[in-house]
Figure 1 (cartoon, rainbow, N blue to C red):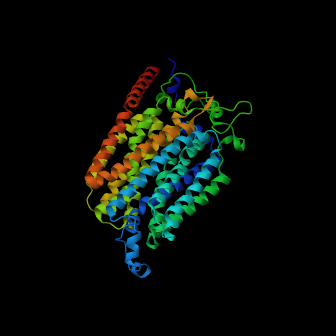
Figure 2 (figure 1 turned 30 degrees about the horizontal axis):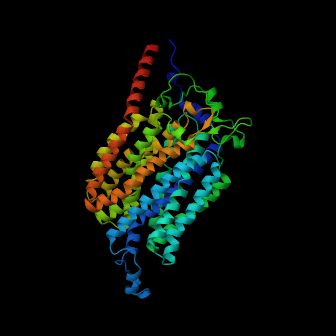
Figure 3 (figure 1 turned 30 degrees about the vertical axis):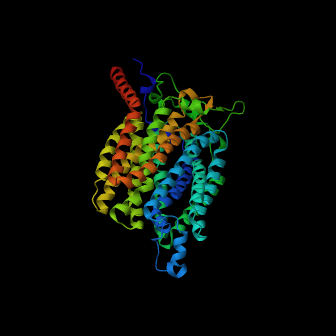
Length: 502
């Protein structure tokens, strides 16, 4: 009995490893650290919220302040009368950033499919670094405090930082094919968590000198990274004379497109001729797909809505975890910054392991569902964590494993799957556009969530914030439930066919 193509499995790593060159390693590292630096500058803001809140309220008077400026002068220039209003404005800034970031993602994905990815990424990194420097360092040096100025800078920063994710995912999609995509992208998507760790480390090291130096350090490193990307990043294999991925994977038809069941086209062989987004044939350059066409691709809307709920939870930990640890347990800000790293460590491990499992199963949705079910339990457990740093760190890492892992998978491997399905194969460029749609929708959900978190915390307390997280995680499962059911049916069908073929 003939076995369907999707069941003819051979070791997936054969096609993956045998075609690696030093160019693949350089691309992996450059895209990894470029997005890590973008995340590090974002993380800096969340790590110094307590210091900023103190600076913006009249209660912040250290031992040298009365000598440098009279109390009356300080009272006439502070932004907020109390810490509660300052905290609410910090949540508003998070919301402003994420809304502009979301709008920028929809635009950046389209731009990335039409312009050179290296130029777009490098411009976004360098210009964003200048905005971050102006926001956190220059204003403090000049003692210039203005709410509207802060809001305008953060809107611009969100738009500029949105150039990062669609570009790096598209470049990775150009260089790394379907074989082992879940593992490669799962490992690579740890870039955001590594950036969070780097940002927390840099901020905690210089925070004693003033929060402005935390912004200065991360902005300087990010600007330097943008310069390196401009001169060193190769956006596609054709730039160095290597064959396109589609040609290679035609010869190795054993990896039958790990995302095929997700897209619902389970028959026929993969003939992904025009796999590279930026690379073009001399005679026929693929036409970039339109925004609404990309929205209509199978799975895009469901995963976008699911990611809106999940990114809300993930980014709430990102923006508020150090503040929560300091506010709820009374720990020092630098200690809270360092402890929050364990959430990102869990996300790194979770994204890698869950991506590898999804490669073995050749299905993504069931792996996500299992992880998110455990995430509900871990959120409930973390909400009741005692005032103990070791216990808190362990539960935090477990929570990061089950929330950060699925978040990394949707934003990277699944976005690459969605942008590489048969409906756009060979005629259209879609990867950056689809990535922008998924991540942009997720950022809208995260933007709404940050303001809700500050409101819920102020009126009901932190426990209700965690109940809100549990509701959003459950909603994520609900949105992908049609895909879960379909992929489980396909798994059972494939198992029956293999049993008949033996």
